[in-house]
Length: 459
Image (cartoon, rainbow, N blue to C red):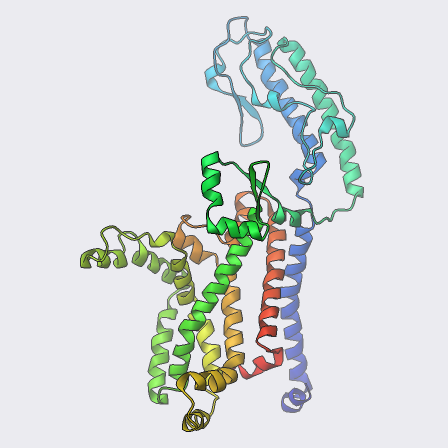
C-alpha cells in the first residue's frame, strides 16, 4: 500500500480501493448473502399454511363442481367426468361427462378436487417423519366420498373448507411469529430417493462398478431389498470428478503449448502461434459450442469421415460420451489455462535450462526440476480458473450431450430454479456447491504449496 501511495498519490489510491470494495460488495458479498437468505428460507408451498390454503381451494372447487350435478335433471350419468383444474386454479368439469348427471349417491364420475378435499392431508416433514393435517391440528377426519348423495357431499366439502380456512388463518399468525430460517433446504441435497427396480434390474445395477463405488462412499444403499440413492450428492460428486478430470486434461494439453510458445520458439514465431491460438476465440462462445455439434453429430463431419474411410460401420454416438464434453470444455476454456502458464513461464531465464542440460539433465528432469517449479503459480492459476469454469459449466454439457448423458450439477441447479420452481432448494444447492468448490481450491493450493501472493507473478 505504501508503494501504491508513493507512486499514484493518496487520491488515486483511495479511488482504487473504493472501487475494489464496491465491486466486492455488489458483485460478490451481497449476491451470496441473498442466495444464503433464500437457501435458509423454507419454500412457501411446503408451509402448513399453504397446505391448508390448498385444501380450502380444493373444497370450494369441489362444491362448485358438485353444484352443477345437484342442479342437473335426474338422468343416468355418462362415463368420464374428470374435473381438470384450469391454469387459473378454477376447476372445470370435462365436456365428456356433462350430459345430464344425476344427483343420487354414486351417480357422479370421479372428480379430482373432491378426491383431494380431505382433512387426511400428508404434511411436508423431514425424511422418515410422517405427519397428517387432521392429527396435527386436532380436526375430524372428513372426506368427500361418492357413496353419499350429492347434497351431503356438498355439505361435507363446506365443512372441510371452513375447517381449512380457520386453520389457515391461525397458521398465518403462528408462522409469522416463528423463525423463518432453517437448514431444511440443505438437507434436500443428501435426501435418499427410492429407486424402483425389478429383481433382475437390481442384480444388474448392483454388478456395475460405478454403483459399487457409490455404495462404498454411502451414496447408494439397500434396505430390505429396496435401493436408495442420494441423487443430489451423486450428481454433485460426479460433476466435481468430471471438472477435475477436465482440468487435468486441459493441463496436459496446454502445458506443452505454453512451453512451445514461451521457451521453445523464437519470439518472432511465437507471435504467429499465439495469433493462431487466439483468433478462433473471436467467435462468440455459444457459436463455437454449436459448431462442435456439427462435428460430433451422427451425420457430422467426424462420423462422415470415419464412415467414408471405412473405419466404422455405424456412426459413433459421441453425444453419449463424457469424453466429448471434456474435449469441448478444454477447447472452450483453453486460454484460461494457457495464458497464466505462458506468462509465468516466459519470465524464466533460458540460461537456467541450458545450464541444466549442460549438467546432464534429461528433458524430463529439466521440466520437473526447473521449468515446472518456476511455472507453479501460473499452473495453479490456470487450474483454478479452468476448474471453476468447468464445475460451473452449463451450456457445454447441455448442448453437447442434448440430454443423453447424466446431467451436471449446474443443470440440476437450473432445474430447481426454473423447471420445478423450487428456488429455495436451488439456492441451497448453489450456495453449498460454491463452498465445496472453494474448499477444493483451498486444498489444491495447499497441495501445490501456493499462496495468494504467489499469484502476483502471474501477469
